[in-house]
Length: 554
Ligand code: ADP
Ligand code: MG
Image 1 (cartoon, rainbow, N blue to C red):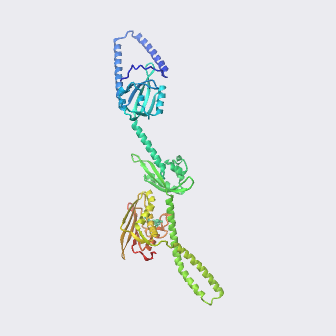
Image 2: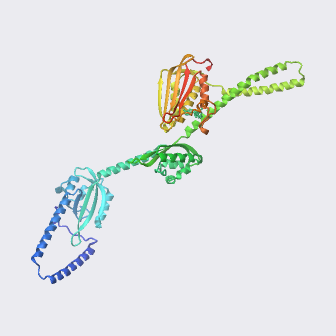
Image 3: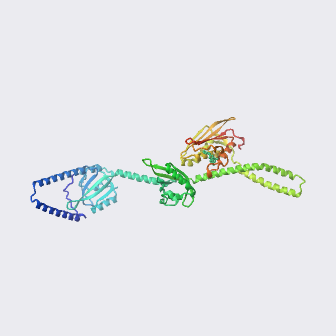
């Protein structure tokens, strides 16, 4: 150790000095008493005792040497300064160890006699330096972390702890500072804070509502966007409180699905309505995936809720238009059935009118009957017009119609990670009623999407093809397949019946019925194959439209 004893520092008075001196006085008095009693027991100092004293001194200096080496070689920096002056120019450095040279790039000779301030620079935290100075003035140990500068001007973070050292008289004579470089920790800390800030910005800027839940399903976090939507503070959604925001009619099913996800560790997917701050309920698609720890155990659930109000509205209007189409068809059938007899009636009444044997009263009744008949005819003509198709046949590329339908379904499919495989072969231009074709293919695609579980597969193939039957016809074949649960054997013969549905209130049971009607209008064919065997389940719907345009397509 090169701690110089001749630095000529003045020993200032420290706050602990009086008490320490008192203790020292007491110790010395005690020693004097002991020595007196020793002298009484043994009036002369024997040679043995001198030898013992010498031995003790040797041991002490060996211990000192060991300590010195330890400090010299320590991994942490050890720096010893004089105790004063705390203010400019600062206390002089009396000792630094090897680690100091390694950390700062300064050699001992360059820093001895100078002040530790030479390590400071523009980015050294002023507040931390002030705290150190205050502690130094009050002779209090201090611990701080701040930026220092190496000899080559590069910055580094250092954590330092300083303690004042007193001499045997209780005067504070030196400061010992132990320092350790913390640049790496600081870089990690900064990166962590950065990535946290990025994550926070991300969670607050995406339109989805974000939330997390404990493995047991209790809400642990909701994004500010989520809290704002609900019109509460984020803390009000924690625990099991989230159930309160769900539409009462959706609660039971949601809880059941949530429980199932927790028990099986599978993804939670559910559509349910959430109460907005203004009290209105809006449809959301909720998904949560488990995040697992090192041992595979679930650490938390990370969830998103996506606004699907627009999609729900589109579905609803599709249902409405399906219903309207059906109403139209019914009206059309009815008016057709009624119009023929009406025409007969009109003719008959006309013949009766020409009969001259009718008296005045009969003629009046006849006039009234004709008037009523005219009203009925008008009413049926109106409803017939209601059904009449607006569009005319035109050349359309079927693959483009299919693409447009898949695109329209994309948000719904992406939300459930449904994988779509499409294959278009050859020219698929066909003379058809585009609106009807869209409706027919759309119904089949909808059914497949509705049947698919998350991550399910949807295959769509459109190609030129030959159909063998009575001779053969050239046309376009569209195959739509899904690996959903399939159609039960008992249901299969009924799926083209109007109003047959297995979807409860959400189904109309009209999709396939309408599709078949449209296919027939285009002189095409439709066939459905399905399998419900677990692991191999799925449904394939094949539609064929001949190139030969039917003459009645308008
Ligand atoms: P909806 O879809 O309104 O129920 P549809 O006429 O479109 O009416 O379909 C009738 C029924 O046929 C459905 O309720 C369903 O049971 C069955 N179905 C149709 N397509 C599929 C499919 N791809 N997978 C499973 N079931 C299907
Ligand atoms: Mg349907």
